[in-house]
Image (cartoon, rainbow, N blue to C red):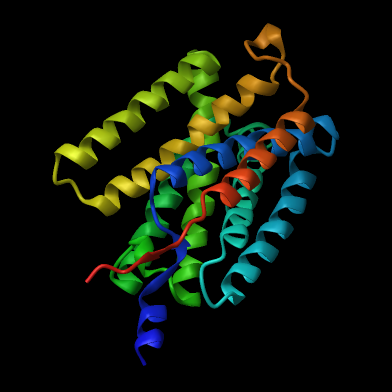
Length: 253
């Protein structure tokens, strides 16, 4: 009975630590380079690339939901899937549909807020510590999907529309994340609000870092090969998971 109660109290997502955020930024950067590799380098276009990554995302979510407990590789595979499909979906909306970075950012922000509101109204909490059932997982991954797509559009808006460039955009989001960290340690602002704020902000940080790695030098990037950069990031994430084992978040009582 005790083991059963412990399993019920454990979330199917990892404990939020410093290493969690390091992996999150690496995964979002990989999402940008990987998404661009398929849509641009392979010349498949945003719509076809979105279809491919959406299929992988659905398969990853189903595998994650089928698990009885937290599995690091399943979890981070699903996170990477959300970042890649978020990259191509945002690019498709912003560029192919012509709504622009400002329109895409506004639309996706509204969808993210609506997703969180529906989750809260249905389940009574949007804390990641409660992600231990298929129903909550549906809300969790849907919300993450919107946050990852929003992050791509927001990163592009900051770098291009706002004219800050990739390094300027990275600095802005790094400062904003530092403010979130300060708020966590020195204020009583809701930890759940701070978590989702940080979760959203790490995505545009990863987006501008990914663009900085693979965009042409003339555009302010390093012009690195997208496939090589993606492989290096994937190896970093895999090595990190093996060297620093993670455990599931436990529900506070």
